[in-house]
View 1: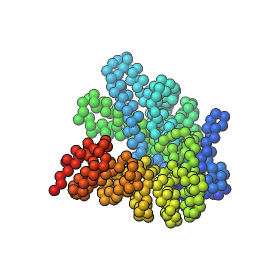
View 2 (view 1 turned 135 degrees about the vertical axis):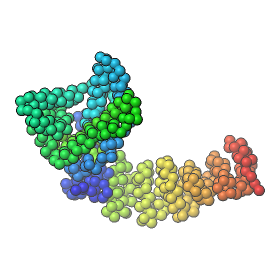
View 3 (view 1 turned 135 degrees about the horizontal axis):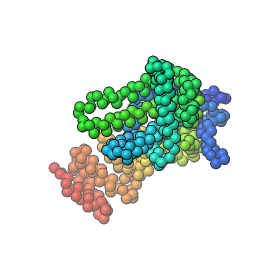
View 4 (view 1 turned 180 degrees about the horizontal axis):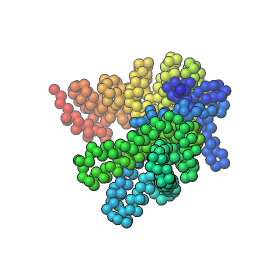
Length: 477
């Protein structure tokens, strides 16, 4: 059963305070990065009582693999694995045209591909759901994991031959079925231990599968489907393609499904790492992008505290907290939004209008036009003399025009001109107003009069030649 954050019920909780017994998501918990002996150590504290928080078991936060099937199929379509699949299969096709050199070339391509498949498996097993990068290590270093998997197959083939010789074809068949069923478990043990001997130890790989339980069988079922998919697809396309292109396309499809299979096995390790004893160090927020854990900035910590107070209904306390911590200087858009809305709800309209100027500046910088229009209209409705910073007001006027509100846009431009008569952008504001009258309000006469006034008042302005050309195109009845 998923445990939800106390303050964000739609988010799964990752931490619990042993003192308050309150559950927190990654947005609420207070994170501190402390350098110890040259390495960064990440600590998580309860934002209320400052006690060291305890991580909630991963099974309460990690999405089960059977609920992520579309993401598994999308994984190899990322630019890195898809590009590698295409390049390696083109190289393999070229190498296949040669004899001795072609054999070693094709072998090298196969090794590189399986190295990447194992890298995908390891990344996923550690909570990183983004495809691994392609670097020199992939091509030139540490081929041991691929060699060990190949040796597992060699050992199993040798044992199969010996068992068949000694016990007959039926006993050999039973052993083969056993191997096929538990081969994914052997790969998982190999990744966890990096030991060839341990990966072929039945006590280890059978025990590991047993601890995962019925989910292992479900994973195995999906792996069988993935393994058989290329053959099924090939049956329907073979008659439409040339032999060479058919061979290439078949290899690409097989590579695609192989990457999915290794990614799936990695996710099963990740989901059941506690049951199988695989150590994982991750944060839930990093499921899509594994990065070095970083400490929240001051704005992030303050925002978490404010959100907690809001959830508890302590709006006045939230306002006082923002005032005391920021002293009126807010550079974070989310924090500015919380403060503005709090002031509006508590009907502190004088402070709301002052904060509105700060909030509008941040919205303009963030190019959030819809919200920019909304907040500006709210502030103007409260105070007809309200005027934000000149550059912001110009953006507001332009945004209103773009959103199909030409009359309000004209009022905003006029507000800008009245509040900033000496601003060098005034002629441009007049020109934009004339453009709205001519093209949006079908009033070319008004537009022409405005432009003539601009030419008369600012004869030496850089914009005058453009204004004169535009004026010549206006058709006044």
